[in-house]
Image (cartoon, rainbow, N blue to C red; front, side, top):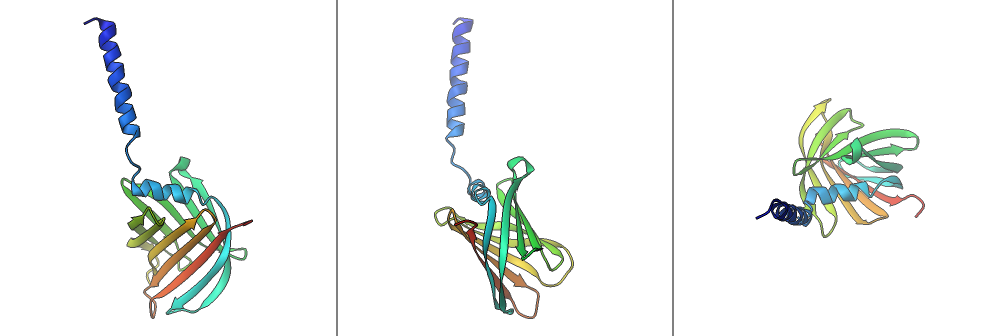
Length: 173
């Protein structure tokens, strides 16, 4: 077999290998991070507490992509006062979230359920840095369409567990 023929066969195998590699299905964590990237921009909405806390307030959420496309930063503010920031990113095959809470601590969470059909992600706390006490123990994201988002924060460690529900709409919609 000639050198050119061997080279042609090798190149052919390489092309097939690349095509097969490109056809691999996207992991659930990669899909969910893609949904989060699609949230880029400004959102308006309302937060409402239930359970161990009560009350409601208007809020603004902003999403931006950072880390050369490897992370999504979420900033939540009431009026002009930023209150919470979360950073979402992949860690191997896991989707992770670090929540910089208004309570002065930083729960680190891991996605325990990603429903690609419903575009929902559930996170559970792995560990926490910062102040001890009340903290976010779980989060659920629901993305029914490109212009609506619901976030449920489970707040634990206080007198009684509470849920903070954020219903957001893309600004300008």
